[in-house]
Image 1 (cartoon, rainbow, N blue to C red):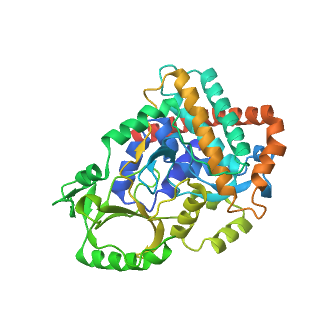
Image 2: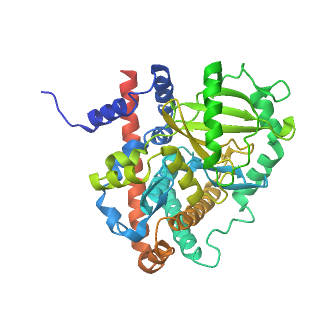
Length: 419
């Protein structure tokens, strides 16, 4: 007798359905990446997280109301934090990647980040469930403290001095990276053309160059502070093999002329799709979303402006080849923070740092959603913080239990590939 509606069948059906539009080679590459570890599998299956957690009753314990709805990053995990640069090319550590950004309850970001941390920790030789439980506790405590402290005079205050676990990392990024080195990696001919021999770049047709250049002229009007004229477009290439969850989306690099060749700019133009969370919304919520966000590239830019501490000055959106795209600069200093070298104490410190950054960015993102401005901050201070112990118990239970679920799903996924 065939058993229906098993977790394995549901898992495989959803993976096939969600990735059905990907070309065969992109889907094969994505699945190969996802098979490497439960954590990478988790990164590639944000849609499963939202299906499983969107209607979890525990969300109502410390949220599920108007004041708890804010701009979310939408795909929070520990490798969506890294080195970036501000308008003056100063390096800082913050959250990146707003492709899945959505207005929803703050706990979804916090839950997903906590789960990712447990999965990442599980790959370390010193992993224990007690350590993971402690790390989630540190994350939650730092998050609540950061949200509440953001209610002061400057809720968008940036971290002026890097904490010890990332100080050496940022110094290394500053030492080993520059705009010139980035251009040397991706271009040739005195930084005037993309390197056609690069394994992650493909040439595009002359007609596509013309059409994308025309779309870029229209994009100028979407920038916060548009220049009178777009700098000269020197070259265009297709970017391949990037990301995990977004693998297979159309993506292009555009090389713009700077004041001199060493100051040329690379724009990252990425196809944007409806966030995975929208599919599991109730019908009225879906209707609100699609009425509010009529262009996915614009939604990406709105979220970036609302959440990020230093929004990209090139941030904007365009329509090309029948699809919506986001536009932003490829940061010369973009670098993920490697957790492999952390010891137990350093990992606990990083948990606090991630919690602080997420709390500050949530407080900032709430300002663009709620009419009262500080409604979310006030809600956390008055309703959640007094129940901190119970709040942390829920967060720890969600993180550790769902991490086990991901590990089991990954095993089922691996077995299906082998078979």
